[in-house]
Length: 204
Image (cartoon, rainbow, N blue to C red; front, top):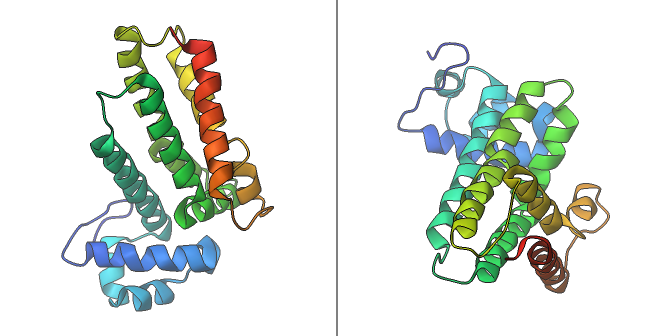
């Protein structure tokens, strides 16, 4: 058995994560029972507990794994020879795409709902979700400044501003259930607006 607070990886680790991910997205954190997760993952409760002795630990690991996957995929797909506008547009499209995904939309709602009772969940989600995006944006913006494409003094502020601009017209509507579907034209408008406003402020 894994010790409390410790994740043990094994042959069925990914299988457990996939099953738990479906249950959490379907039933929420409170509604997701260990029995349902084990059944969905097609493993025994003993196997589930041997990997994840705590439901919060399992939830956090699902968030971490998905956010790492998104970040790694974006890094691998980025064209670093493209113009700064093209790179920022790519980043904005990825940020907006994550917000619109079933996982991103539902996980934001779950973390907000459970954050007051389980602050560690909120901190972990921020660190491996928005916090990870922030760190990668800072990293790339530093390179753009070194190349003379941007002029930035406060990288943390600039990264936060860009991320927030990418959410305009999208995030609140999804989180508060004001729109079941965001049209591609709306996403394009938000992405283009984010890049244009950012370049107007920080373009060299």
